[in-house]
Amino acid sequence: ELRGPRRRLATQLHATFVRLHSAAAMGEVQLMAYSREYRACVRQCIDELAADEQRARGAAGGSAGEADELAAEVEKHEWADCILHLCEVFFVERNAYVGEPLVRWLQLHVAEPPAIGALVGLLVPEQSADYWPALHRLLLHGRLAEARQLLGAHTQLRAHAALD
Image (cartoon, rainbow, N blue to C red; front, side):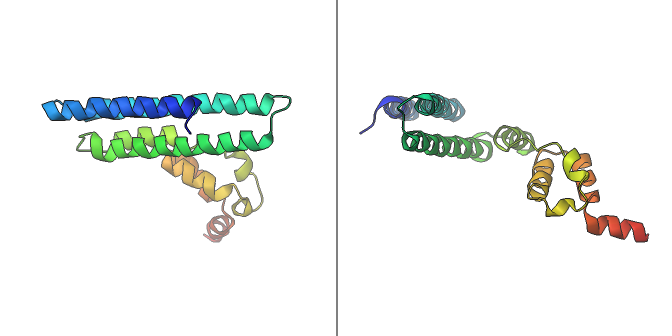
């Protein structure tokens, strides 16, 4: 049974689909507007579920299991929003060049890379669990100078540079 945010989401998505279907029958489909409306409904549900999760965690008699279930549901909806947005970038937006919309998507959905100062200062930075994920995020965010700096801290590159 759907209750609360899930019921509102289902109702809103159904209404959006009905409007899209009737617009398609009249030949007036503005797919991007409907896609954004669809994602806005999902975002609203995420916000409501996250608020419910916070209330469940803060409640004196609240169960951790309920809060964990809500957190898992928030994560699922966030993934749905992320995938819907990526589909917009590749299939709905009619740009010849997807670079700019893709960078916006990456900045919105891929976590900001951590500060690399601590990693660069380590004796063997590549052994840190954060090294490779930080490098990947730097590259995804287009922060090439910082990525080069982090790669330059790799012990094999330092050893090779010392031999030259």
